[in-house]
Structures are given as C-alpha cells and as structure tokens.
Image (tube, rainbow, N blue to C red):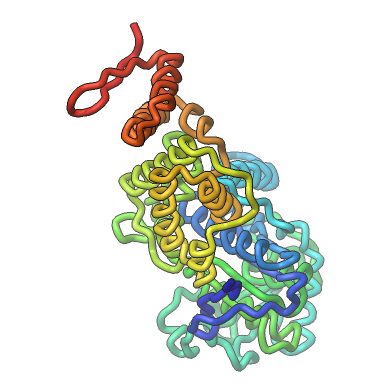
Amino acid sequence: MNLKLKLHNTLSGKSEIFQPIDENNVKMYVCGPTVYDRPHIGNARSVVVFDVLYRILKFLYKDVTYVRNITDIDDKIYKAALEKNIEVLDLTDKTIKMHHDDMEEMNVLPVAISPRATEHIKDIVNFVEQLIKSGNAYVTKGHVYFDVSSFKNYGHLSKKNTDDLISGARIEISELKKNPLDFVLWKPIDENFNLGWDSPWGLGRPGWHIECSAMSQKYLGDLFDIHGGGIDLVFPHHENEIAQSCSFSHQEKLANYWIHNGHLTINGTKMSKSAKNFFTVNELLKKYDGEVIRFMFLMTHYSAPINFSFDTLDQAKNILNRWYNALLNTEPEETDEICQDAFDALLDNMNTSKAISILSLKVGEINKLGNRELAGKFANTCRVLLGLMHRSPSSWFCGEISNQKAWVESRIEARSIAKKTKNYDKADSIRAELLSHGIVLEDHENGTKWKLQN
C-alpha cells in the first residue's frame, strides 16, 4: 500500500515526498480570512483545498495541529465599520460567525486553533522588539519597518531578486523607509484609523505580515511542516513572513513545505472584492447546496485556476446526484476501508480531479453490480478524504424542493435498472414508493414518464 504523500513545494519549485518533522504531530499553518465582509468563493476555495489536505494528513498521521489565523484588524475592516456605522469588534465578531457558518455549509472541518490578531498584540509587540534588537528592524517616527537588506535570502520563495521585486510589485513608497522593499511591522494610529494599542513606539497597531509570524511561532514554534495559502500571497505576504520569522528564530526556514492554491477567476479575471467581480458563498448557498460548491472546487486541481461559471456548478450538482443515487439504489456496507486507487490520486499532490474520475467509475460499477462492499468503500472515501457524501441519500434528494425532481428521476432510473436485471420486486417497490409521495409513473415505448397524482 502506497502511503507516501507527494506535494508541490513552492519553496523548491518541485514535487517532493512529504517528510514530517514529527510523525506523531504534523504542524500546518494556513493564512485565514480578513473579516470585514462575508467570504467570497475565491476565499472559500483556499479553505476547502486545505481542508482536504488536513483530512489526508489526519488519515496518515496520529495527530495534526492545524492553525488558521483570523486577521481582525486592518484598514479594510476599519473602513467597513465606518461605512456600516458599527464598532470594529462588533463587525469582526459578526463576520467571523458568518465565515464559520458558510464554511460549515461546505462541510469544512473545524481547525485545531483559530487565533485572532487582536488577541495576540502582546506576542506581536514582543516579536517586533526582538527584530529591533537583532538589527533586522528600525524605528522611524512611531513606525517600525523590517530592513529587507538585513535578510540575505529575501526573494527565495517568489524566485525573484530584489531589483525585480521593486520594479514589478505594488510597494508602499514612503520617505520613512530606508529601502522601497522595507515593510511595516508597526504603525501609529492616524485620523483615518484611530483604533490602537500601547507599544514602546506609541499608540498604534501591527502591520499585516507580522501577525502571521507571531501567531505561527506561538502555536507551532520556529519551524513547522506546512505553510499554505492562495498563490497571490507568495509575494509579498509569505516572502515577508519568511524574512521576519527566520530573522527572529535564526532558522534557515519557517516551514519545510509551502503549498499554494490557484486563483478563482470570472471571465479570466481574478475574483476579488476590490474588483467587485465576486459572488459570496452565502449568495450561492441560496441556490446550491454547500456540498455542490465544495465539489465544484475539487473538480479542478488545487494549483490550477478555476474560471467560475454556473454551468460548472450545475455539472457538480448533476454528478453528486448520480453519486447519491448509486447509494440510494445500493445501500453501502459500514466499513473503515477506502478505495485505494482514489487515495493514491490524492497522495499524488492532492489530485482531487483524478480521484473524482476514479470514484465516478466506481459509481458505474456500483450501479451495474449492486456491490454493497464497494459502495461502502466509495462512501467512506468520499466522507473521510474529500468531505463529500456526508448526508443520507434520502436527505440529499428530499431535503429541498429544488432536489425533488432529481430524486424522482433517480428513482425512475433505479427502477429501470431493476427491470433490466429482472428484479421485478424491487421495480414494483420503487413504483409504490413514488406513489406514496404522490408521483404516478406511466411506462411508454420510449421510456417512463411521471406526473403528480390528482
């Protein structure tokens, strides 16, 4: 049995066999949401991707410590609070709850630790103080900046030298900085953002990048196994995290493996709130089950971009209907076993699209042979590793009015299969089952039609 997990490591630019620091406790940190509004589906894709990785790791190893932070202090948050005329903490509390509710609808597992930046100001201040003492940061008029020239490996993650980064990136220009690439660790409050905390440099608040370094160090230590996030975070966020964390710890690395998921686009343009070309998860949940949204993400390899469309969501829904219908027709045996070939696909750099193709072939076998053992392995693989098929088939088809037509058609298909295999008792029981729901079947030469009972 192949139980070696291979992951594409952004740091090395290669696919590598995953070797944990401690096989008894794998440690993973993933950049979480900035909580000023409901998550859009671009945000949700990253959460689902790393939920699958979390599930794979939990299957392979004794314990997994998964930390996903919450950025609850930021210019965008303050601006949104002003626009809505509410307190910042009221906004963030409300938004965090909406985020958790939306993720739960997509069957995302709770993480081990979900730290909020505002609850770790002391840790952040201590971190910044250490960087100043080591000569990696400097103070200018209440601002504290990281001195990029003090870190020789800057640009290693993004594979760019400092000249390329200066010319090609959006960098805050300020006369307070020694170098254009220097980034802020602490900033004073101003007339536009007056929420702050006491520090040795005056009343202020942390920069964005330092939050993740302070919290990952607190909960996972100086060096951990996996750091993840969206591809747009490689520079500057993750590059800056490495610089400040390695300067703090005097380690060569912050994490051994850096994993990044691709963008979610609309008409080829990255989905973002600033571009106003996005759908929130909540908007889509009014039309589609959360499992359908999750399935849509998994149909594409995590590292590739997804060009969002409602056609893709409909395709995901149709496949799930077929999968649930197979379990409706062939009641799965209870088992802890999985479909090894589908798991092998997941072990090969989380190839969810290949795993889905393999599982779809299993559905064909289940429908053809009525194999309850295979149905059990199929269902367990979906539930445990992909976070799918966690509901009963009857709940899936009858839970919502929008799914009733699909359920009726699935039962007609099951009856047709029963008749072809000369299982007439089952065919009659399906007809009776539908009639009990007020559905009348009419058999014709070109197929079976249905109507509501008068």
